[in-house]
Length: 145
Image 1 (cartoon, rainbow, N blue to C red):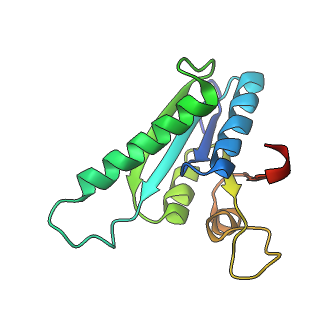
Image 2: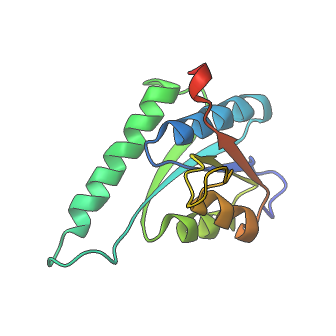
Image 3: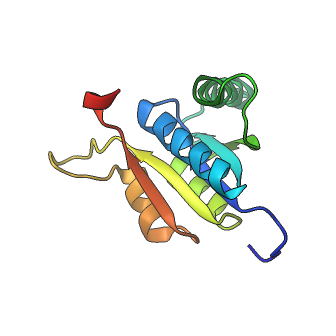
């Protein structure tokens, strides 16, 4: 960020998964401590579309998913500043682009890559290597839900 008087911005990748909700929860705790603003970003893939105007339906589904995640994690009236963005495109590319205007990018990782024992999923791995700000990867622990 360039404006020293502006609040820090934390971008959180949200896809409705438990790991992304864990990432949102971590970001909310961080925002409480630092006064940061949260920008919850969800994407939807547009290259798979064949019909004439399904983008509106996919965008609406994505909007519903991110708003539901925010409500589930932060409640109806969050104690931190949170906005949501719905962006068409591949999640990794969308999050890297969002990182350009962020102080921190927080993503969840399910870690279900092609190889057993792989710790980062493909989106979080891409973000770690290409984001324009620091990245925190949150792993969901099924044993402590």
